Amino acid sequence: MYHSLHGVSARLIAAAIALFAVPTGLAAQDGFFGQPHFYPGNLVVSRTVYDNHAGNVAVGQPLPPNCATANCVAAVADGKYPYIFNNAPVDGSFGITSRIFLDQITPWGFPINTLEAPNSLQPWIRSDSDQLVGSFSSKSELGLHLSTDGRYITFMGYVAPVNALDVSNSNTPGAFDSTNPVPSSYYRAVARLDAWGHLDYTETNAYSGNNGRSVVLNNSYGNDVFYGSGNAGNGSNPQPQNIVLGAGAQFIVPVQQPEFEQAPGVPTPVGSFSVTELGDKADKVGKDDNFRGITLFNNVVYYTKGSGGNGVNTVYFVDTTGGACLKGVGVPAPGAKLPAAPLSYTLPLPSTGLPNNMCVLAGFPTLSNKAGNPANFPFGLWFADANTLYVADEGDGYTGGTDLYTHAAAQTNAGLEKWIFDSTTGQWNLAYVLTNGLNLGAPYTVPGYPRGTNSATGLPWSPATDGVRNITGKVNGDGTVTIWAITSTISGNGDTGADPDKLVVITDNLKATTLPAGEKFFTLRTASFGEVLRGISFTPAADPDHDGDNDGGSW
Image (cartoon, rainbow, N blue to C red; front, side):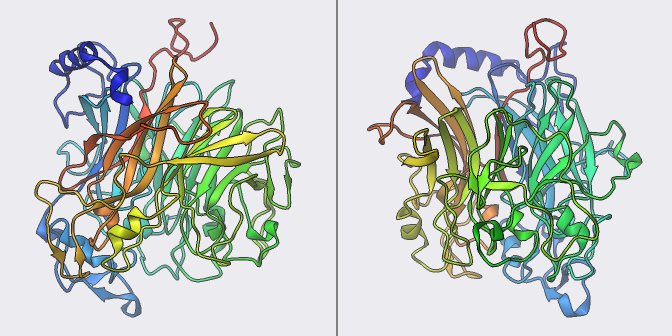
């Protein structure tokens, strides 16, 4: 079990470190005592916190902001948390921007320090200052990933002030959709964070009408490019050309300018998938690429799709060789390389959308969401080795009745899936699903959070775990792996993304092919009132190759 990996001495060391920690909320962007802000072997958790004021929304005010009369609805709740999210059922685009925090913790959960991303609530931030926010309660945002050289953590957000409404479904300035019921425009941006706590930002017109979820920086061997994962489009069909170009899998080149000097151009996709590759009838163009998780392994970019009425909920990869897939399914070709350029296409785009260069990873589901109710909801990915892949399944999010808790508990795929590659058949097989200790469907209490029934939904307020979302892991020297995960929830909240969720950890026998007895998730942290946890990563390294020059090169 996880706790057996760390004795009393480790806990005492962690407690000692905590005595010298930067106080929570301090943006220690030059470290402290002349040292880096982040330390090797620790974890970083992304967290977003709602600015809890009744005046953020007035009952009866039109939503979305500045909506055309035909698109307007009236707010049914004011801005007090969590009641504000009872506006989500009446305004399908509802959300409110919120502060982003990056918390450094030890692997066994002790807090060390916190960095707050620049935002409009800080008195020194002006309108032309660099700033970044998340959207409360967009549950798929703020995934964290280490760069290929280990020197940076990357994530995505919005260039907007705190407490702006419906930003997560707004247009981007360079990809405007007149049919989007949210008429406002905000850039999305990639944040890059180093070991000293320094942040810089690259704006993009991608993910117009929706959100960027995760991004990975490929900065090894002379490369310098972000691969992004997200969704686009909040308007009618057919979607405008720049909406389609800004969907799903993106190729974003970092810039070295303040936000106010940047002028991002047309989005540049790195990949695209269509259900027509599987022989199915075409869906809404661009919505097959509603991607969530992303990871890089052995020079291949992998994505997951786990929501929406289009496409297939499954695991994908970008095929840079052009010959790895048969009828939309396959495994990466030996010697494949990471994409060095965006996807090639011609304008204007045909009605079928972008060319297809992505495949379903062989062995994973291929049933389209239109052909049957999906049973898989994949999110985060982590490869332990070339033959072992862990996939987070967030659960189906069912809140359709008073049986929401028993429904969550009865799920068979929700949790942490372990997949093993069979070289004989050339495909991946599901070995087992780790759920022990997650307590799927068991309601829990959070101090200050309401109990009883939400009168707006007729369902209980108390959240319960429904599965897991973003993950990261480590291979241990004793033949086990330890995996950290952020949970998903169900409840009677108007938007379950606003539920306080958890950070959990489990240790698994790497070579096991059947579910081992006794393996169990442990909760390291539960989000507090008015906050949610989103991403998990190891800390960026100040000198990843230990050669003293901080260049990320070889010895």
